[in-house]
Each structure stands twice: as C-alpha cells, then as structure tokens.
Length: 116
Picture 1 (tube, one colour):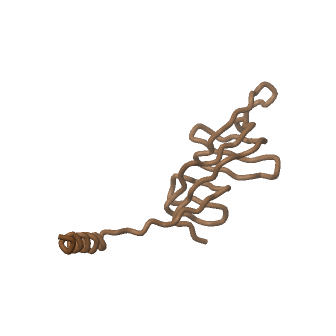
Picture 2 (tube, rainbow, N blue to C red):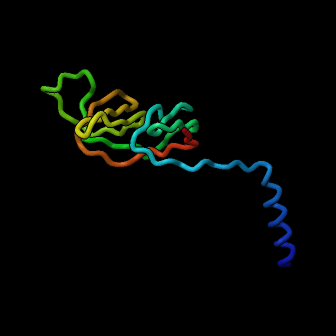
Picture 3 (tube, one colour):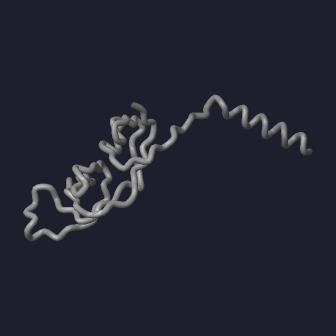
C-alpha cells in the first residue's frame, strides 16, 4: 500500500513539472513608481511584474496644488508611487491624487521581477 502511495505521489509531482512556473522573488522597496504596471520601478531597478501591497503609508500629507493654509493634513497609502524629495519632504501618489508629505512613513511595496 505504501508503495502505491509513493508511485501516485511521484507520478503527480512529475506530471505537474511542465506546467510549473517560477515565481520571481519580491524586492522590498522604500521608493517605487508605476506600481501596478509592467514598467514599475523600485529605486533604480525596473520591475516588469509590478509592485503590490502593503505599500507605504505616509503621514502629514496635503494634496499637491492645494492651499495649505486651511488644509488639514492626512495619512495616505501610496498605492501608485512613493519617493523622498529630501529628509523632510516626500511625494506620495495614491489612486485618488498626488500628495506632499512631511511626516513619518511605515511600510514598503513588494515589487517582483526587478532587474537593473
């Protein structure tokens, strides 16, 4: 009986090999652009399989172009892109718009298939 289980297991594992695809390892990115496209970037790397969750969340964000005098700042999840302009300022692109952020950040984007 054990031999039969072994044969069945071996046959199933070999039968699946031609259809198996390698999954590229994810790169954890603190700076990324074009997340959901095949032209995504992670720093200076190109990532043709795109970037996905959990994405960076940035604090103290204001919409680009908004009058900042009367604007409350918000936290934003940067679904599309995130980059630091300098130590105090970052740009965050969400599904809803572009923001300038002056607070802390948490998280990263997981980008796959990255190469130089």
